[in-house]
Image 1 (cartoon, rainbow, N blue to C red):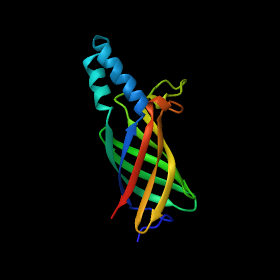
Image 2 (cartoon, rainbow, N blue to C red; image 1 turned 30 degrees about the horizontal axis):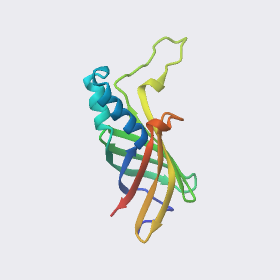
Image 3 (cartoon, helix red, strand yellow; image 1 turned 60 degrees about the vertical axis):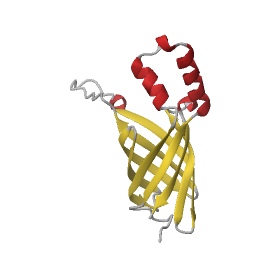
Image 4 (cartoon, rainbow, N blue to C red; image 1 turned 45 degrees about the horizontal axis):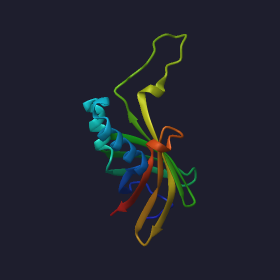
Length: 158
């Protein structure tokens, strides 16, 4: 039986939705000024207008430290996850690698590892009803960019 006290090995399936107001503004701008967007930008706006499905598997969960490590797969590719579960709250960072890989070999400078990753911050609630664990809330791309954020939800799969 699934248990919130130890989620090691649990598989979740879920979906996330972009901020509907931001999506509507982008689609309106694309319709009104199509020549101001490259084909790649237009495709991204149209692609990001919908909802996306994902799978997330918790590799390890330590209830004492509240820390969990997971991996996920979605339309943007594979990502690594580090998160915390405390009481009925959950928060985690989903980290994708970028096409850039910057590692400075200059011993007098610190490498800027941040450009190697795209980080999305998820936060919300988690609960259990019978043998299903459900979590959901909001997500932000960048620390305070609600415009690029949205809503997410996931349920455990048996």
